[in-house]
Length: 372
Image 1 (cartoon, rainbow, N blue to C red):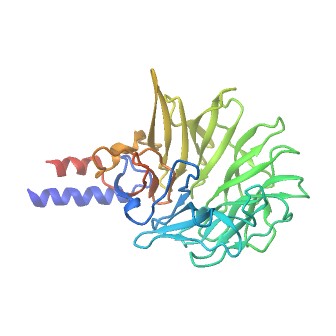
Image 2: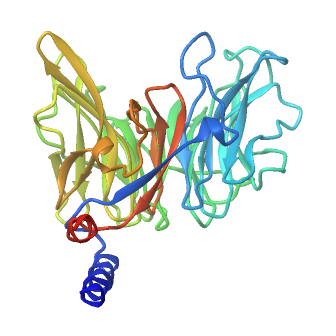
């Protein structure tokens, strides 16, 4: 009997690993990172951030340096804890994204004041000083938001030639970036995420000054507006995966600013509301297996219930809490802030501690065998 169970287990694992978009949701192992060198403060005068995660479980964001009275960029690595990234003579900075090669992008400030110009930058390693990216006007704010595995960077830059902030893609830090353009002559745009095909997801303003979720494809002069369903006034592109699929948030209730998470399929060029029954939702990111994580607000009279969600095109929406095999008693996941290409997740739990979820690709069929 044990040999038969083992054979079924191996067959199920083989089938699962061969499926790019699983018919079943993955399971996760939980780790409290406050016990592993990532002590952060979510609330208060100086809230700290969890911005991005890669497939090695590295996490980047910012923390408050109480001794220096500044915000500092950091990287957390398994077994090494949190390391503050060098500022290279700048006063403060923020880390916004990283790739699987360990390169990190963000912004640095030349002054204690966050009103002063900040510059987009890249850290080529956790020990390296930041390298400023090319900007055409050093008196205006610019930003680096995402980086792909070949080192191309997405963000935005103010240009006197454009007279606006435009989405930008840097191929090399020292070279002028590619202008991602807008949907309107005088509009603005911003790049948020870039995949390994150098496609960028973000937001661009149209001719009626409304923000629209967009995808930029190399070789095309203008951004592609993503036609998401039931848009009221605005939509925003949050992240793109290596298949070119995009997730973001659309204003489904005109005038109220209430939005729903959407998933846009690059093959069909169609989008869907992925949390249609919830009051509000927002996706944090998307993996290469089309796994989406984020938060939802549900109207449960007389209260509003907040929880984290997991979604795939085939499995639909699930409560991320119910997918964690070792969540301690009394602890719940409060936010899902980022997901890596291969499905590692980070966010905040109900203790106010940062967490790491490591995917355990096991199907419900295997769960039943183990329970028997």
